[in-house]
Image (tube, rainbow, N blue to C red; front, side, top):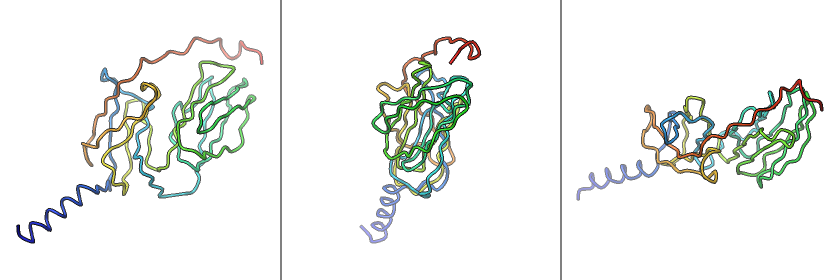
Length: 212
């Protein structure tokens, strides 16, 4: 085997082992029926902290719903709750990433809550059982949440990973799914998730019919 052939094979092998996604990667997330799936978190798992400045992540409560329903954050960010409702809420979480028990009165803002640990923080309201939200905390800047049409675009990065991780609240046991990146840059890759049926929240009285 000639030296030129050896060098070429080595270059190809190194390039294949260490992909660099200099451009953005586009994905469409859908369920097993082919319907667009919003609120899926797509990310590269390897830490890629291009900016270590803590970000302020706002989770609002409006219309007796958390907004957004799913949020992607990184460890070291600061979470802050707003209550834009004319009623009180009692936020709780039993998640190991951030246990929480906090009453928020109408039209108030919480203090800063440091996101110290990676993991999924599942949130609820003790007053309004139909309220739920999820904060997915990781060690990477490269994480996005799919929109209502299932679109998710990961920005370019220097990561060497060949697969993305995908999380969704309706996945069985809310486990992470690993998906090889096959589309490459400049194309759109479709990812199909097998999810549980969507639970419809119970009908609740209008807020102005309540007394707190």
